[in-house]
Every structure is written in structure tokens, then in C-alpha cells.
Length: 138
Image 1: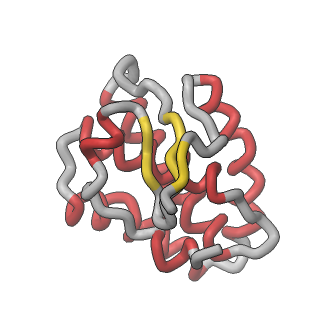
Image 2: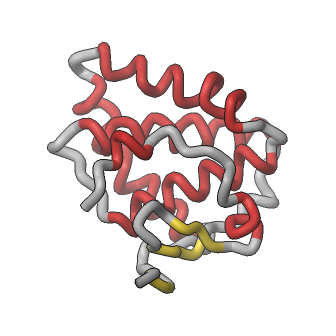
């Protein structure tokens, strides 16, 4: 498995795939992404912040691992929200991932945020997303 911490700073390079409803992760896994079109801007901003926090924590706290499919769902949904909110990669990184990485300075962050990963993943699945790979590149 590739290190997710190194890939946590995702750019919007895959925006075309994500707009079509699927996300392609590093390594070639594609999953169904949820429909975020019905979210208000405030809801979208709240969700993208939560996704960035969970991504950083699950990528850096061994007690809270996620599968590649779950990670792709988390990051792909975040990228989709960033595109919806009109954020370029730099603004996305600065606004959401900068604060998320600062969480790693807090010794209690893993145990505070890590347990929120499973409910967040289930919420995304309930919104139409999935964690099962649709395709895998050769």
C-alpha cells in the first residue's frame, strides 16, 4: 500500500473524473463519489474541512487506518467539493489541509478525530458514494 500521508495533499488534477462521479486514487483505484450538489455552501465548507481532518489523521495515526477505497472516497469527495466551491489546488491546500496538518501537533488529535472516520465514511456512502473499487489499472 502506498503511503497515504504523502498523498494527503491532493490537487484537483482529477477533477474531470470526479465530476463524472468517480475518483481515481494513486495506484489506480476508482470509487463512486457521493452527490454533493444539494449541499449549501456552508454545508460543503464544513464537510470539506471534516474530510481534510479525517484524511490527515487516518493517514498519520496508525490506530485509525482506512482502506484504499475508503481513502479514495474521502479524498475524491474533498476534491469534488473543492471544485464545487471554486477552490484551486493552492487555496484548497491553504484553507483546509494547512489547518488539518496542524492537528498533528496536538497529541490528542488522533484519538479525538480518528473515531469520526467511520461515521464520516458511512455518511458519504449514504450520500451515494462507495468504497468498493470500480476499476483498477494494470
